[in-house]
Length: 240
Ligand SMILES: NC(=O)c1ccc[n+]([C@@H]2O[C@H](COP(=O)([O-])OP(=O)(O)OC[C@H]3O[C@@H](n4cnc5c(N)ncnc54)[C@H](OP(=O)(O)O)[C@@H]3O)[C@@H](O)[C@H]2O)c1
Image (tube, rainbow, N blue to C red):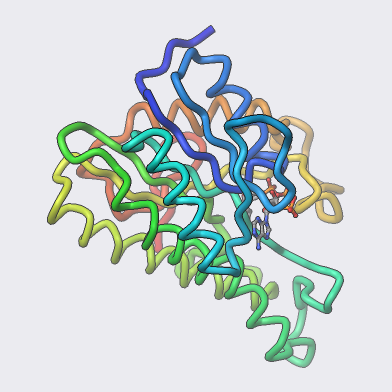
């Protein structure tokens, strides 16, 4: 089992396919504290409630973790939504776009992670290398968009990439060894991608465990010079 350098880690969205796999892998890596944050809190003293659409719950979770651990070495935001039961879906055409659905995508995929950064970046240690990583998506790349469709998801992930870039600049002022990135996990077999897995060749469809291993490899190798970028599961830069 790999030995990891972090002492205190928070995984936000620990109930999700990728988030749970990341938290499990980190737990297996001999880390002192792996804090799991989710709307549906798993039983256990290291689990905390968070709804990233509710800033009060984000602030309360950050305060509770600060009281427990003091400071964090790594924060991973593994929340996200592509479709929901209220009408958000990956739109094929402009005529399917609605304000309510697009707003829902932005609240979860861009505004939520921005508020998490607001309350969790101050928890990062000041004197050592630390990482804040939010799961983004290659489809949030503007220059890489050749297929079209998925207006709300694409636009919300593009907005997330800008939040990450801007937060990276601010983070560097107080924590020169702090790193703030977006991560594209590849296509991963989770509930989020379930309706779209048909047609993805098996070697390109990662299990959550494989995706977690690949993402942790990328995180371990990150340098401050890569802060503000979006990196894919293989460590390559996803163009904005
Ligand atoms: N799977 C892929 O192929 C793929 C590809 C590219 C990017 N991504 C990105 O990877 C990330 C993780 O996705 P996944 O595949 O692991 O999806 P998933 O299994 O559906 O997990 C999504 C997670 O987000 C959480 N979440 C959603 N809204 C929330 C809220 N308001 N407050 C707190 N938690 C909330 C869910 O919590 P609940 O359990 O409470 O609903 C769940 O834990 C997402 O950002 C996604 O866009 C995934």
